[in-house]
Structures are given as structure tokens and as C-alpha cells.
Image (cartoon, rainbow, N blue to C red):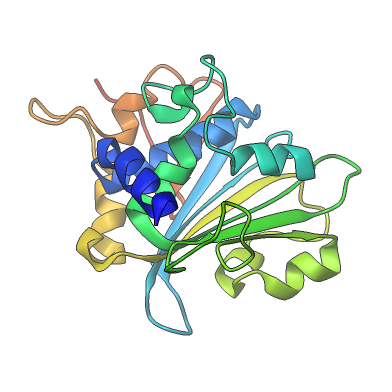
Length: 219
């Protein structure tokens, strides 16, 4: 199907688990977050690895969420040495990294909105095919459908955006190894690490944590 061909083409430049997670962190920083908590773990239900990012940014409404899930919607001011500035970042990252991607957000005094995209859908008829991508509005409906690993990280007063790479592909290895790679510092042979990508932001007014360990700048 054309949708999967498009996503496969866009996701090739992502290149690594770290690169994919960086696209999610970009979304948070672009929304004004000064703290991003990354959690790497294993789903209770099926023992698959998941990665979540939860921020304290501005959050958003259904229009903001829809823009996030629309390829080509963001401008050139987006992204930090990643693909976000091309408007393809998070969808490409999610396709590269996992079987299903979730996002839930809420702005100040707003209502909860959530969406997911299911890359296991073999033959989506169009980008908004409910088998491929669905949206949910209101706290009751959103909390009813969210995976427990994501729902447990937000509460009724949450403002910001929470994202989840669900059922991470086996080629990306175990949760422990992924955590190690996300905390890795720059070396002579590797610059594609979070501590280097965000070196100018970390330690100032921005903080990123990986399983409660603060990410320190390197490079």
C-alpha cells in the first residue's frame, strides 16, 4: 500500500533508536517544555519493550494533535539536528521504531485528546482510516483506551504531551540496552547520542531524564 511505502521511505534516515526518541523529545521542546521524562520498560500484557516521553510543555487541543500526526505539517523552525524541521519527524520515527504509536495531550484548562497510529494495519484505505489512525476526545474516553504504561504516567491535572512507542521492534534490543544507549555520552566515533544532540540545552533551563537518571551534556 502507498501509505506504508511512504512511511518506509521517510523512516530510513532515522537510523537508530536514539534518533527516533530524539524526534519525540523535539516535539516536547518545540512545545516549550523544560522537562522531558523518558521511560523505557516492558509492557505487562505482552512483554514487549515500550518507550514513553512525558513533558511539561504547553500541551494542545485536537488541532495541535492532528498537526502532529500529519506529515509535512511543521515548519523549518522545528527540530534540533533531527528530521522535525521537515515535518516528517515523529511519524517517521514511530514507523522506524515500533508497531503502534500513541500521543495524549492537554493544554491549560483544556480537555484531554489522544491519538494512535497502528503500523500493523496491512491495507489502510487512507491516512485517517480508523484501522490505521484514530482520535479520542475527553478524559473518560482517553483514559479508557490508553495503554496502562502510558496512562499511569499522567493524572487528571496533567498539562503537556505524553508519547509512547508501543511494541518496539525486536531489532532494537532489550529495554536495558535501550536505556544504556539513550544515556550514552558522545565518543570519537559516535555523535548520534541525546547528550550531544541537546548539549546546548541540557544543564541550563532544560532537563531530560531517562528512567529517572538525568541526561548530562557531552561534546
